[in-house]
Every structure is written in structure tokens, then in C-alpha cells.
Image 1: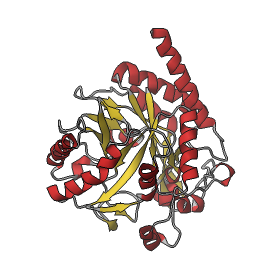
Image 2: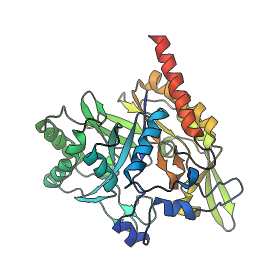
Image 3: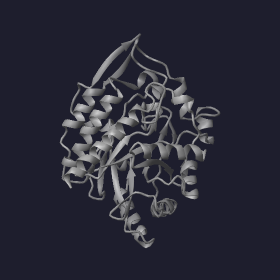
Image 4: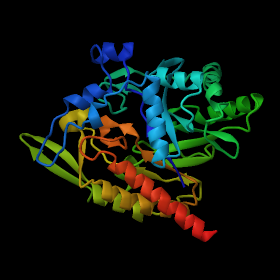
Length: 357
């Protein structure tokens, strides 16, 4: 089982964020201003040794890759932002392609949702909208991606580069676009493209165009877990706040039937969830998360992924979603404890595989 950690690039300054949120805004801005909403709610989260890094620094990107690799992460899935030719947060990844460093496997997930002031991807208070265009626009997008697809570090399935789409149901001619991109891929000497649709909190795209689905946790369980027991509504002053039960979310994940229609499914895992740094009282926070629990649940999910899903990949939310409480990077509260659990689970899993040979 190869663990791929989702990777957010919003840890460097860009002109658009300066305009929308104020000079110098990065993801760290939200993280630093967060406050504790109730007893037991640990905020703000602080990176170990005050490591409020800048992803335009190649030394930071090298540190991330070397740390991830040493603790058992197979590769990163970088979020990719494309708005009909307009790119956002592209500089760190462009540098990874240009320099060939770090030497660490990666793939891309097109986060094709509108950017909104509420950080929720809904069609209200939009800062920059999505417009998917026609074949000429699809061609422009593909020609940007092809350099990454041909990179020797790019993660492949049966020789095909793996490309995730976050919200395929939002793309009016999604199947046409996929067919067109597959033709272009072959023309460029590739075996094709391994398309993966993300299944999370938004409507599922029912189509045979995709080669696989990825269960984006905990959002997939929030939306499709068929349980109300994971939520606790808390009254804080005159406002209401939703608290999530960590153990019950993981229980719902582990007890769920893995296949819907026999398609290839890549299971998901999540470290924790707390998006109050972005959304304050309107966000959700989670109670009950510890490194030990995460390791226990991850171990069961890896075993389940191999036996029930028969999948070679699992996607972990996330490597560095600090403003959503979903990060494996070391912090002041637990140090490297979450990463140590990943390493333990991977070693345990490798031992099981070895004994089965």
C-alpha cells in the first residue's frame, strides 16, 4: 500500500491573496489568528520550532520530501489551480518541475472549484470563478500539464500518469474533455491518462469516463456516511458550533462497504479535521484525535484497503492543511508523533506482506 499525502501550496505570497485578504497573506495568516472556542479545543496550531515556512524556498520543499519519505509517505498529491488559463499558487510546483528537485514521487489534483471568501467552494461571494471553455481551452490546460505528466517522478498506473479532478460534476462537458485529453496524451507519446474522480462532500459524478475514484476523508463520510452520530451541536454564547467525534467518523469509515459498482476505489484517511482557523464559529472542529488513535485507525484502513479494496494507493488528508487541522507535519503539541505512527503502520504492513510471500 502506497500512501499519497495531499499537499496544499498556499504557503507563499501571491498578488491575488494580497488583494483579497491583505498584504502578505498566506495560509499561515489564518493559522496564527485562530483562537480556542471551548475547553479542549487546541488552537492556534503551531509548527514545530516556529517553522512558518515559505514554499518558494527550495530548502523547504526538500525538507518536506525528505521528511515524508523517511516516515513512509510514498508521494505527494499537489493541488493544482487552473481557471481557464489563469493559474494560482503555481510557483512552487513550477519550480519542482523546472529544477527536478526534490526527487520525490508526485501527482496532481485539479481543485476545480470557485475561490470564495467563505472558503467553502460554494457559488456565493466568489473571488474567482470557474469557466471550463471548449476544446481550445482544454488544449491550453493540457499543454501546461504535459510537462508534469512526462516527468520521471510523476506517479503512474499501468504507465499512465494519475490525474485527479476534485469536482467533476461541475464540469459541463467532462466526458468530452477527458476523451480529448486522452487523445492528446497518446499524441504526446503517453500511454494515456489515469483519471481519478474525488468523492467528497459534493455531488458524485456517475460516469464510466473515470478509471477510479478516491474517497476524500473525512468529507466523504460527512456527506455519505449515513450517520448523524458523528456530529455534536455546541452552544457557545449565542452561537452554535459543530463538533465532530473523531472516533465515530473513523468507525463509520472502517465499517463502510468499499465498493459501490465494482469500480476501482482508492481509500482515504484523515489525520484530523478543524477548519475553524478559516471559518471561525461556522467551521467544524474535532474532539478525540491523538497520534495513537490515528495510527490504530490508519493500520486498519491500510489492511482494509488491501483486502477489500485491493488498492495499491491510499490518499491521506493531508500533509500540510494547517488551517483545516489536517496535517502530518510536526507541531508543537505532538512533534513527529503522527509521522511516527505512519512509519510504524507502513513497517507493520511491509512485514505482513513479506510473510505472505
